[in-house]
Length: 209
Length: 59
Image (cartoon, rainbow over all chains, first blue to last red; front, side, top):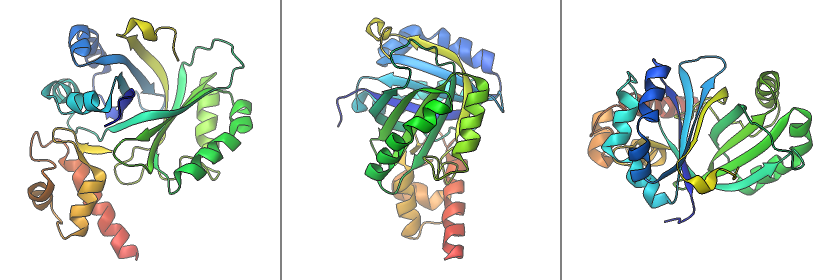
């Protein structure tokens, strides 16, 4: 199993966001026990009950342990979530800073979890799209590949504004794009949201993107 | 994607048992365990069954 850090991420339907958020804020010790280095949450711009949530842990083995823990299901369901959604578990394969070194607060995000027919071709497509992304207000891109399926990926793009985030999503869905197979089977549709929480449990991550 | 997080069962594993003839959540659970612990992933398993069924009809 991979020993590099991996993310566990999902799009959850959270009926009471404030309750859910305060529950996780109170769980710092438990997060650390489970090996969580960072957690984040974004609320959808189109449906506030929809939350793109994720954690970074140190290894795939740790991710499996956390995912299978009773604690995980408890956190998801205790505040009224009825269905446990599918989870993406993957390692980062690329990180593009499109700001030319400027420090940017990536408050808005477009995220997509989907399958790709040809991973290398997809990576090339993303590279080729850099100018289009800069023009559209993308400040940073993170790409992840699933540990359980080499054809499954997650892309996260931070945007300079809400307008830019919405435009990227709309534009991305009308071109041959990275989002082609999102929203199919268990994959959630591409997500556009505003950051509501980012917590570093590992102090050394504070200066890292 | 991990559909059943309690038992770490992936969408691909579920699709595989559907392809081998399991067409209900009960049969899928019996073959790979998905949905047999907390059971809160069963709606997602049903979505996969429906999607595979629809894909089969389109062929």
